[in-house]
Structure formats: C-alpha cells, structure tokens
Length: 434
Image (spheres, rainbow, N blue to C red):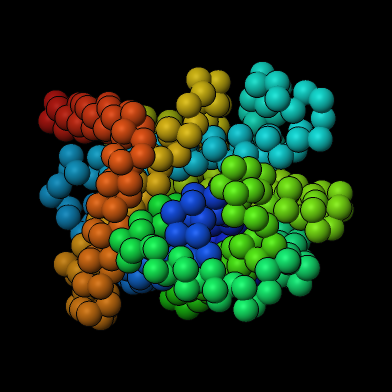
C-alpha cells in the first residue's frame, strides 16, 4: 500500500489537533487565576503534555496500531474486555464532543462580523455545515486531506506568530513593568494555583495522539511517530507561550478576563485596528478548521478499530479504499446532534477530564510493559504522578467553581459506563451463543 503521509503531514495533523479553539479560551481563565504568570503556567501544561506524550510514543512504536488509546490498553490488558469497552467509549465520545466544540467556535468567529452573529440558529447551522464539509474532505482522499491540513496548519501558525509579535512589539507594558507584575503575582499566587492552571489548560494540548491513528498511512512509523509527536508538542507549547506573553503585555487584565475567547481579537484591534482583529478571526477560523479535520481523521480510524473488535456496531468498521467511511459519518452525525442539543461548554469540561484520565491510563499501561517498550522507569513514574495530580486538580477546580458542571460530567460518565458495559456484555453473550 502506498503511504500518503510523511513527517510534515504528521506534524500538521498533531499541531492541527492541538491548536484549535483552546488557545482562544484558556487565556482568560489563566489570567483570572494567576495573572501575569499565565504564560508560564500554560507552558507548564505543555510540560505535562510532553510527559503524557512519552507513553503514547513508546506504546505507539511498540504496537503500531491505529486504534491508539483503545488498542494500547486492550492489548496490554487482554483479559479486561469490559475495561476495553469503557476506554473505547470514553475516548470516542471525548473526540466527538471536541469536534462539536471546534465547530461551534469556528461558527462564532466566521460569522462575527455579520448582523446575525448572535443568532443561535444560524450559528448552529454554520457549525453543522463545517462538520460535514470536513467529513466530505476526509471521505474524498487521505492525501488530499493531508495536503489541505498542511496549508491550514502552517498558515494559522504564521498568522498567530504575526499577531503575537505585534502584541509584544506594540504592547503598552514594558519589560520593567512586567517584571513588577510578575513579582506581585508571585507573592499572591500559590503553587497550587499555578498547577491548577497547568491542569485546566491541558485540554489545549489534546490532539498529539492523533498521529498514531494514521500509522497505516505513514512512512517509517518507528522514526516518524516520536519525531512528529515530540516536535508538535514542543512547537505548540512555544506558540502558546508567545501568544500568552503577547496578550499579557498588550491587553489589560480585565479585558482578558471579561472578553474571554474574543480577548485576542479585541486586543489586536486596539493595536493594529481592523486589520489586527481580522487577522485574529482568520487565525481562529483556520485553527478550528484544521482541528476539526485532524481530529476527524485520527479519531474515525480509532472508532473503526473499536468497532472491528465488536465494541461498537460492526458497520462502523467497514472501509472503502482504507478510509473508515461509516466511522466518519457516525462521528459527524453524533457531533451534529450535540450541536443541536447545546450545552457544549459542559461537554468540553467532560472532554478535558476524559483526556487527562485516558492519558493517565496510557502511562500506567506503559509502566506495566516498560521493558518491552524500552521506556525509562523514572520518566514513566513522573508521567503518572503528573497526570494523577492534574486530574485531581481539575476536579477540585470544577467542584469549587462549577459544581453543576461536575454533576453533569459525573452523570455523563454513568450513562457512558452503563452503555459500554451493556454493549460489552451483549457482545460476550453473542459470542457465547455462536
């Protein structure tokens, strides 16, 4: 089979999956908790992501299975049928909720200059439309999707770099004033708050594992999996740090907190006029578009792999020209339903906690077979401790600030758990009858 994805395309898929709507929403939360320390706390989240990526890389090279998260856990614990079903359902639903959120963010920015920008019906219709547009692109061609992903990812990175440079250069806060702000925020912010920000912003780094889902379409997996994932995580951490630093230097703290995901756009408008605001809008549209495309590409292959094992309907496993057609259609349809129902902010919180928990399970699995994967015991233990801490901190943050969302998340986990358990049991009974 001809391999369609090289290192450049793989890095684009990982960066595209990570740099979505996250950077436009985490700034306000981060600044509200730790002030001028936000860029450093966000970068610390990247360090947590790097340790999480370590286990994914080792397991990805060892197993070379496009099922990634689900397949790694299933093959490491082959007797845990129900557990495999659970992690499969959790992971796929996490990806679907992320797709819905990216589409909704795309819609918010793409229609922001029109009179009907606040019309909820139009916003949802545009979000649904972009989901299905990228579904068609993914159904059309792997190579075509990869090339389009290249263009979108590297274009948005260039735009974000221009915006960040302009914010830093024209920012009203000089270096001396910034160091004074840092000293003040260091004296008022606890280590706990910095760690909470790092944990909350971890969701902005979700997406690097999508590289492994493309293992059947990539050249030289042994070299390209680690190269693509490590390069992407480091690159995205640097991008987030520069953007956050530019925002803190140029945009008043109150504006960053109050304007939320539009803080960058409003700040750029103050400095560069309408051109600056439009650049941010274009950057946001490209960011969410590439995130939708990359997430749909990788997660649909994982969904097909789970269905192939019988933990989802068999039709989802069917492919045409190695493209999981029915998985792509199923994910798009479910994401459409989520957009219509609403409550995407709640689903986002579910997704962030899900990916922390799933990354923790991957680190534990890697620790179990660390000799086979040739992993460092020290690095693996640090990864486990970091992810345990991050998971506990984000749960604590949710409990303290948004207890209603935490109750919703728990209810959603119960629903998914019952569904996963029922499907796994039905499968086992069916196999026994056969």
